Amino acid sequence: MILIADLGATNARFCITEDKRTYKHQLKYSINEFDSLDELCFEYLNELDIGPVERAIIGVAAPVQGDQVSFVNTDLKFSIKALKKNIFPKGLLVVNDLELQGHALFNLKAKDLIYIAGTALKDGTKILVAPGTGLGLSGIIGKSVIATEAGHINIANSATKSQIKDIVDEFAIKKGRQPNYEDFLSGKGIKFFHECLSGISDNFLSSEEILSRRDDQYCYETIKLISFLLSSYLRYMALVWGAAGGVLISGSIVSSLLKEEDFGEFRREFVNSETMQGFLSEVPLAVVNVKEIGFLGGIELSKKLN
Figure 1: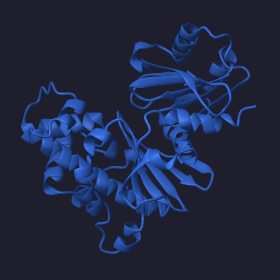
Figure 2: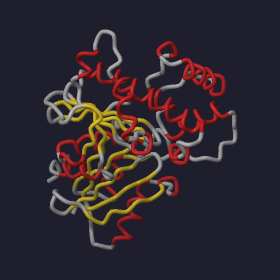
Figure 3: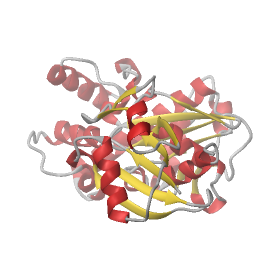
């Protein structure tokens, strides 16, 4: 048996695979309720009570560089060597969460994708972008998945709409630094946009509630501006990566942010380039309609464990 864990900044999702083709025993925990990753893993394994599970694939919302791993949007830290020694002595693979999810692309079926542009993925480089608590991006080149921290690129003030420029300035005043894309294309970014547009500083609405209230003026304006910013970000990343094979979007906020009636405007902004419109017009653009994309990626990676 192999444990698969997809650990974001908010939620920790676990499952077990026995055959490296399917998964079961899915459970979800709030990551901030635990003081250590050891405690979190033991909680899951003890709750299952299915005997020893000594191998694991773990995706983390953090860069993985060496033994020590520190999450970006929560205080959790751990040692890969210690985790392997204490819990998973027969095999442990720790990767960035978007690298984990990127491996799912090798297992996706046609029904798992909702196309904004195009009707099928193509050969060539692809990228997966996931706005949620943070903003992740991985590149898929052949059978390799490359983790990045591309969400932390600063937003160029001169390249955005006037309303977004005002919000960039407001962020810089309040936070004392320039915003990056993760600051805005995330749950906290949605709340910040709504706060700036509505003038309500103590915003009681969650990001999910904001995205669901399209009949409210400020919620709708937030949706439109976040959609514009996401589409332009995808355009930049498609050009940087040369993502002729496709641009895929997943993450907890996408299904609420983008409805079918938004696809036309979203696609037009994605291809909005004076010099590269021809290239961008040929790039497939799709939403990944899979709830547990990390588990599918873990299934693919589990084949690398003996």
